[in-house]
Amino acid sequence: MITQGYDLLDLRLSEITGLSGLSFVGDDIMINGLNLSNREILSSSVLSYCTSLKYVRKAFSNPKVKALVITASMYDELSDAERQSRSFIIDEFPESTFYTLLIKLSDSHYPHYTWKTDIKNATVMDGAVVEDGVVLGENVLIGNNSVIKSGTIIGNNVTIGACSVIGGEGFQLIKDIRGMNMSIPHVGRVKIGNNVSIGDNSTISKSLFEGFTSIGDYTKIDNHVHIAHNCTVGKNSVLAANCTLFGSCELRDNVWVAPNAAVMNRVVVDNNAFIGACSFISRNVKSGARMFGVPATNIDE
Image (cartoon, rainbow, N blue to C red; front, side, top):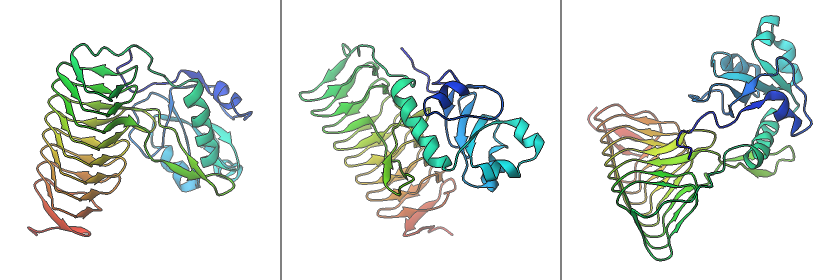
């Protein structure tokens, strides 16, 4: 049973490039995952990509990024020391090539959680589906027609309403080299803490590359709430009906999000903040702030 969410691969770079007939420059290093270079990375050694020289140099500041997919022109601009600091896959379309590798690896090498889920301490209502590879704590209630996807970890004393989906695919798209929409598989997971309640028709998507979309202890989630991939919700927070968390945003502890509010991707909402109904949060929110409007502003300032 796998409960950690990082170092999901254990492959040489040559094994990865061999999946698509690619070549590489530099050492044949071990790769433990794929990820974006501008994110916090848990895995020890990752393959990433860059679409401009500016971002290549930023990627060099992330010690977890050991290999990059870049164009030949970007590689030619690097100093000898920069070339020696990483391994490189040289390709005309770095983004498309990177995500094509992720698609291939998601099928063949990323973990698939196949153990038989133990539901003896859970109440699973009619029509609900708990897939193999789920970890359930004590006293878990799963409502009618809800689906708990493989890889999800659920703590003790958790209630999930009807018709909710926990651990499903997130929504990540890129344009392929023809300009067509390309859906990207997610290889991460969802972790729900203790004493959490989740209402009806709510969705929590699994993380994209590694780690977890996570919900902290004692958090209460209403009906029709969407929490996108890689979000983090702290302890004792409240998400009211129809609110939306965009991908990779963070709510810290004791945050209250009122109905129909939305939090933009990668925004951090600090402890004890209040987000008013129908508000749109487009920038970080400081501790204790009361935010209202579109875009939201702090009504106490």
